[in-house]
Amino acid sequence: MKKSGRTVDEAILLLPKTEQAIVRRLRALILECLPKAEEKGYYGLGVPFYTRHRMICFIWPSSFAWGKKPKENKGKLITLGFCQGNLMSNENGVLKAEGRKQVYCMYINSLAEINDDQIRALLFEAELIDETFGLKKKRKKINL
Image (cartoon, one colour):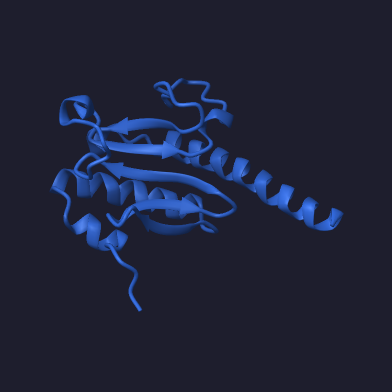
């Protein structure tokens, strides 16, 4: 039985070509760097989120309504969000909190802006943080 809403693949096909290309590249990097993570399409829109022990990251194209007005999204074509961004080192400051306490994001407006090495490093760090949540679950089970 199919869940309501779109799959990630269906959602990508509905995006403008520029957004499709960026989302596909980010998705490939995420699947390469987070092989144990599960991809889920959320909000009935098919927005790709990646989880293992907790939500790790997501790709949010600006074509998907997010509650912000189009003017507020100007210069933010694709959002790559890290759900535990507040725990990441963010030494080069590419992740923006923008008033949020936990989720930090970076914005990508073209394929040329994607720095594979930088994004891989962020994804590997996000995976390490996610693994700590898995260790906490194991410790709780042992102490029961």
